[in-house]
Image 1 (cartoon, rainbow, N blue to C red):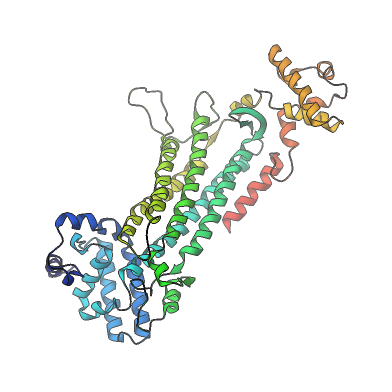
Image 2: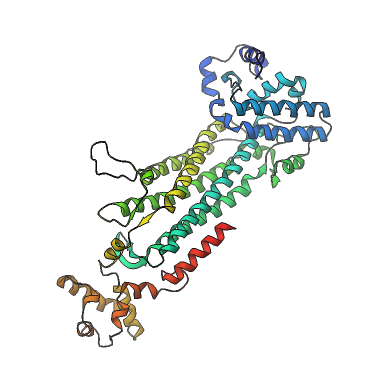
Length: 472
């Protein structure tokens, strides 16, 4: 930034805002701080410039500004990008927001050409365009991270297709499953999250620019040309809706809240599995911390904090819904409050997924502990009931018989698999010697070889399917 640029910029700032000719007294310093957004919306600077360049190109094509003005705008914006990237750009609170800061610097650099850039648009449609451009790019990053997390989970799942662990309902041992199958459940969740991101992106990718303040513009603009230059799929069809709509941001925050909900569920399991009382897994040291007083501790801080950050993201969704619920058409200053929560949601989800891709890939599995746990709680009781059904008993009768067997085993402090054939036949004469294969953990999981089942061969097929999908 040149030495003479800052005084000029400050001279403008001290003199007035862009709209101040209407007013007889300046805004107070407190109100300036209260209403300004530049401290947080300056992250939109690059997309703001991107949108302005497309707008300028359209104005020149339509003959609304001259080619000389267009060239000057391009030249000035190139210098501004360099100043922003180098940290030399001076952001002024008096200029309220990212848009006016960039516009005033452009006027300093190229004069009247910079003043003509705002022809046919308003800050209302400008900011709506900026947010959509920025969010579209962030959605693409988040979608790729979801693919990465699915791939990491599927890789560990494939390697543990034969690793047996207890499956739980109500946190009680229910039936044997494989660790690979368990991890693939999360791969499915994050797969739906990726689908939602793609779907949200379609509605984000609509151009508001050209709606101006609320009613459109009398200049002969070509909105579809701007949409093409910026890579939007279509234009917003109603000028009132275009400047006031924040559905796309709410949709994104809702999808982000689901991502974090799934992250939180996985985090809860990682915390439980890592506890010495369970001991199913270990996490790499770089994702954990110690205690200031207890030297033996290894705390799973990353999954714990991810659980906590889920509430933060949920809160932003509720805040956005509340922000919009009482607003009349069209734009209102309330909408300035849409950005900080949206920005924080994106940052939180992106950072969380980035860490979890790395953490999931490095999960250290302890199969012996998993197997020992699966042998508790009569995990193959349902297999015995299914065995009896296959020999002609109604399921409810088989259920009753096995329930009696489990109760007897509890009294004898043994498992169903420990009972002799004579003991088992006492419950029903149709039980034969092949029952002991049914009552093994391996026999139980192998029997569930249908689509969606926990059989090792099926787990390998599903893991390969996920890996193929994320590599596309």
